[in-house]
Structures are given as structure tokens and as C-alpha cells.
Image 1 (cartoon, protein in one colour):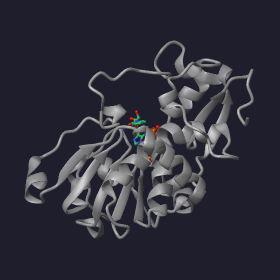
Image 2 (image 1 turned 180 degrees about the vertical axis):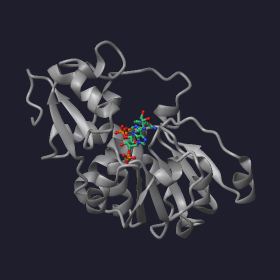
Image 3 (image 1 turned 180 degrees about the horizontal axis):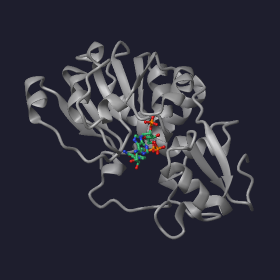
Length: 248
Ligand SMILES: NC(=O)c1ccc[n+]([C@@H]2O[C@H](COP(=O)([O-])OP(=O)(O)OC[C@H]3O[C@@H](n4cnc5c(N)ncnc54)[C@H](OP(=O)(O)O)[C@@H]3O)[C@@H](O)[C@H]2O)c1
């Protein structure tokens, strides 16, 4: 009733999950969840923005209460590379935390002010080398990674009363001491509601926020999935039906 359809108690999958969902050559969708695409925005960009884009935009819109906040984005993938661009456009000081050093140059081009190696958070030994300068540094950490995060040094990077916002679905195992002693919060954020989708599309258009896309034909779906699993996709793969023009 409040318009937060993504949080509905009786949530229904509309276009994506039903056979064949996003892999269909066409779908019939409920008009409430169909949005005008801004002029000159290619379908392949809109496709990425309307999942990854709205997810990160909605989370940033909720939690970035002032442009002077220091924000970290953990994981520079499909969600992460857009989160950096949106957070930069919001005016925040942005740090990209990545396990892939080769992404540094592009992360800085996306608008990151700093790039740090997230393996400091993923090593099984609690390696604090190089991370002390970031202790109590961030107001907000947005986690888009799913795997192998070492939570205690990550939580140490949050300011007192800082907030960790989960966008990915990692397993969580942590010592509650930092959480309590530093009055930290952990929360999640799920996609976004229809007005947020519209606002995100026009914000992206206005600020030139563009997903970096590898366009692959639908016939290569298995290769595409393999690239994603191996963390090789840069930064989102869009599958184009051979029978349609992806740039239409
Ligand atoms: N909350 C929502 O509404 C919502 C919406 C869409 C998707 N999601 C979820 O958000 C998560 C991220 O989605 P995504 O599309 O951004 O995924 P993705 O493109 O695969 O990116 C995930 C990033 O996590 C990092 N990573 C760290 N350890 C990794 C490992 N062992 N293997 C692979 N990647 C690793 C990588 O970044 P670095 O190389 O920089 O470390 C990778 O690029 C997924 O769990 C997805 O299901 C949530």
C-alpha cells in the first residue's frame, strides 16, 4: 500500500523468473512495472541499469543522507561499477574495495577517489597491514561481494555508528564486540520501487552514468555464465537475442 512493491508480503515474480523469463524473445509485463527508457539510452544500458542500477541507486538514496559522507563499495562487478558512478555523482568521497588489482584504473575512471585491495578483508589471517589508515574511516560500506569476506577488519573500517549495507548475499560470521562497542548497524537493500526506478533512469541520463557492457549473443549463454563465475566479466554481460537488435 505504501508503494514499496519490492517488499510486498505477497511478492510475485513478474517477468524475470517465469519460464523463460529474461531469456524470452518477448514478454508480457504488468504495466505498473514497465518504464519509459530515456531517449538515446541503448537497450543494453537500460537492461543493466534496471536491475544493477536501481539496486545501488536505491540503497545510496536511502543511506547517503549528506554528500560529505565517506563511502566504500566492496566488489567492483556489475553492481559495484555502477555504485561507484552513482556515489561519485551524489558527491561522496568514494573508495573502491576490490580483490582484482587490475580494476584499479577503471575504478578511478568510474569516479572512485581511492582504490584498496579487498583481500585485506578476505584473507583468513586477520592481516591488518595497510588497513590501519582506514580504521574508523567510512560512514557507509556497501557490500556487493558474496564470497570470503573477513568481517572483523571490514567492520573496523567503519566509523563509530557507521553502517554496513548488504546488496550481495554473503554468509555472515562475525564477532559481535565491534558491532556493539562501536554502535554499528548492518542492513540490507533490495532492488527499488517503481518511482525509484524512474528517478534512477533520469539521474543516470543526466549524470552520464553508463554501464560497461560486454554484449554477447544468446547462443553463448553458457560461456557468458562461465565468465561471470570466474569474475572475468567487465562489468556486466548482456545477452542479445539474435532475432532482435540490442541497440534498438
Ligand atoms: N540486493 C539486490 O536487490 C540485488 C540485486 C541484484 C543483484 N544482487 C546480488 O548482488 C551480488 C553482486 O551482484 P553482481 O551482479 O555485482 O555480481 P558480479 O558482477 O559477479 O560482481 C561481484 C563482485 O564480487 C567480487 N568478488 C569477491 N570475491 C569473489 C569471488 N570469489 N568470486 C567472484 N567475485 C568475487 C568481485 O569484485 P572484485 O573483483 O572487485 O573483488 C566481483 O566482481 C550478487 O549476490 C547478486 O545476486 C542483489
